[in-house]
Length: 76
Image 1 (cartoon, rainbow, N blue to C red):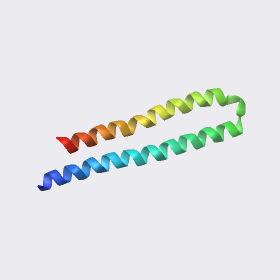
Image 2: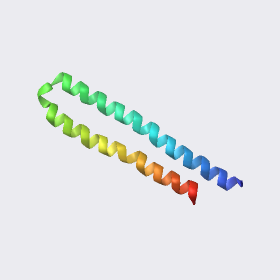
Image 3: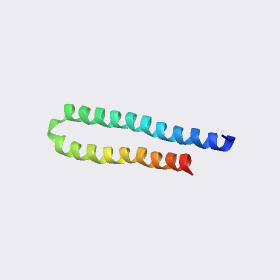
């Protein structure tokens, strides 16, 4: 295996793993703030739930993009 191929494989692995770690932290923080908001003002639960779903959708898009770029590095 030549050096450039090894560097591409490491870059692909780091992109895939970094995206997974980042989304784990992001989902944890969003959920914690959602529960904190409900504990403080329970009457805002429907509004906060909508914001939670929007935030989850945005955070979950990050690992999909990093996986695609990581696979691009691995197989090209």
